[in-house]
Length: 368
Ligand code: SF4
Image (cartoon, rainbow, N blue to C red):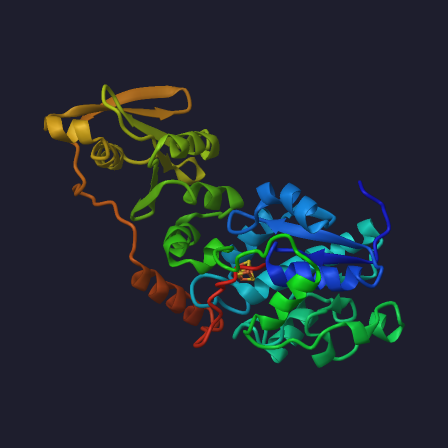
């Protein structure tokens, strides 16, 4: 365990704001340990080594997958944003973890790259206060980019941090950040788009049915739902590979109790059927799924005859004879976004949780 002394820990998404916030504090001669949070939904662990080198930052990866899956299963108390992004609860969760890690790094405060008014849901002044309160970091949190627009923190008052050298940025503009990036001679300006899968409709369509149908949702479920094509028939879940890489990933993320489908004698994808809590699928559902999976083998479809599909579950291997069919008797489908959006809203209403009218789009996808 690292026991080096740092003045602060920082939430570092890899987005520009988070990098600049750290640089502003380091510029004052203070040491910062950057925490890069990862989960099935966000985080770029493969980039950390590069960031260390090009931005000269001290970065550690922190996996919050299980806590995040639990928060989604219990539903975010502050609601979802425009898609399925629970930005306020997400920030609270990360700040709580950062607070726990402060002791390990000997840190006195926490830095985030939040900018007042940059996003409608999570960066309004009142929301910033709610985040600070609910994460229990009231006297621990420094937001260097907007600090001068916020109340002075204890470390500014004590002189540890020079408030005069912090900034008063607000709103959605990026001009000041770009100028700052130039001042710090950043070798590369991170692109703001595409960081958080929960903010993308395509991915929300994958995640929502998992949340609704899985009896106990874990990070492992969301990892599986990130792969290939996703189909549902009631509460039966089928993940189908699009290419070899997906097939290998499906093998990796499948549970021992899952069903594996593979057409015999034709090129075709691997498909994984999740048997929640080891509850076996009925013969009717297995055969229907096999028929559907076989329809992803163009040669099998072209031959127009019944084909064998190998169905494996643990040590048990058998074959079923089916006609390839995309439109099966039971029907496998993925809900369209408007249906999912309405389901998310109805779920929030039923639980008396906020349904945001002008929510964050999470476009920056920055866990800052
Ligand atoms: S967009 Fe950012 S803050 Fe919102 S849920 Fe995703 S990672 Fe968290």
